[in-house]
Image 1 (tube, rainbow, N blue to C red):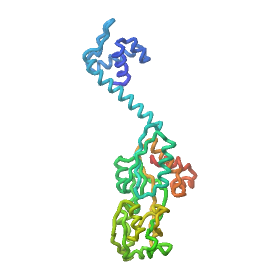
Image 2: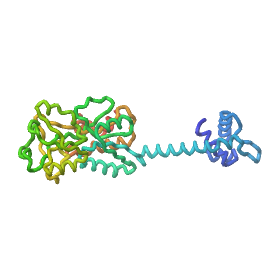
Image 3: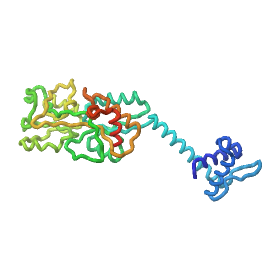
Image 4: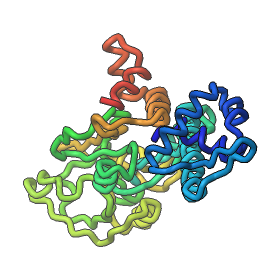
Length: 319
């Protein structure tokens, strides 16, 4: 069965006249008649009783009509969706964002996508890096922004680095560690630790144990604003990314050194998976966004290689 046969059948069923149905379908009557006969052969019986002035549906024709009507309507709906999708109209894009990223450049990215592609509806899901990684691979997300420091490289994904930031120690203004320009790992021994539950480095810092540093978390929290409020109150220190300490917070942040800890946040897609035009639009805007005052790392790398950063990012998204 082919869709033009269904269309011809429905036209005859409505017009009850082969000549008018052929004109309506913009096809020669012999071609329409031949298509109906092929459909009847496939169904195993006549769909119409052909009388000179009284063409009407057979019992079989009446039975299959609602099913073929539904098929035609669903096909047209699918075509409309595909057309809107290709033109970035009424397209949903499921984006996962790591919950520990400072909002500044992300908000700029979201607003820019909304302004330039009003037909794209961003569905934003925040979660831990590991959960976003799993959801991306399972197909629950189309694209994600996260980092997984020190994790084994996963060949199933392609990561386009956006920005790099150092991990800091945040303490209250009166804390002894607030006096220097940096905090060495060994200086943390015995200090009260306020743990970010979604910290990317949990369980991945053997350097602490190697230097005989022992900290027992006195508080665990998902919300970094609460954590910073506790730091300000002198309850302990927090270990968090450089840009996650807002300028208005009454805390002191110092880089952790000896050794240093850094994280690189990337825009991540799945290798070999067909991506929608909406993903390409997001990648282009992410490559054009200034991430904490700097070009996206992937865009800067593309420029250094003599390529177009936006086109390079879009190509890599489908790699």
